[in-house]
Image 1 (cartoon, rainbow, N blue to C red):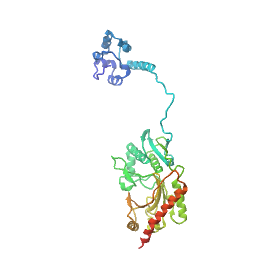
Image 2: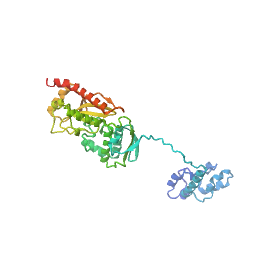
Image 3: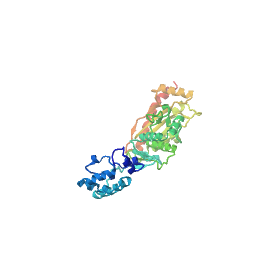
Image 4: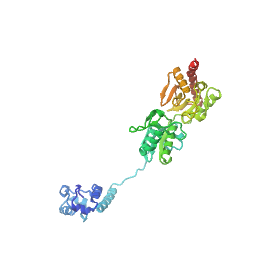
Length: 388
């Protein structure tokens, strides 16, 4: 069959009514290829004329096209038959030997997880995820959240668009995760370069999986079949639940009257508590609850993030009463003013303690005692000047 796409009427008739499709599909297949030594002379001649010319040639190359010379027509069926015959001969001449030893280059430390149990992500390194059969390489849980959200947005933008416009909150979550106003969510970054939607960031590995799990439910996807991720232990903190220890520490300090603690305010990577002084100094708002769903608009938060343990003091500065505003301004006046991020003002951050695989409960309790000492040192001068 000629390479020229403008086939003659004779070739069109031989190939059939769908000659264009036949030519496109079979032109460069094995069954249509051969060596003659006279290709330029044969050119676009009709099949019958090519056979006549080849029969007059005296050459040893004829063995290569002997199975063409005995044909009266050349079409899809004859090409397929010749392809089958030649491929069998090639495989017989050059058999494929299966390896006797299989070499596995995958890292045995990695295994696949679903979102069923977010705790599986704790103290893990992630290297890829699969969403609806597509595999995507990532190097952090934070990147995986943004990547998954972006993929789902491409799949159906209306769901995330609705969440962003209404500042919709996932069930059991306290704050929205998508917004068109970057100040409406914490640690906002652009969801996609070509979108005006922002996504909240700064979550622990546990919270990242909770985020993805909740988003998959929004898209009505199968939590077991439609998404998995590959991760391995980070070898830091395995066997130690620092946040569980932080709750235990809070309970002990609350019994001693040094702090006030309610386990219901804890979530994900945050263990929250308040102090007697700030509870007395900062008014509450029982009519409008804070994003933490509490009447008080501040918390000290114990967090273990990126293998670091520390305590930070956050105030929520939106929707507050005039009385609360006066107290917050007084707080800013007596401190460095704090750092404002997405409606939250950070007034204090303790020493940061790097996680170690040698940490014990005693070590972690001692770290939190140090943080509490720093909190007392932070509050003492404020308290002495508060009513002056």
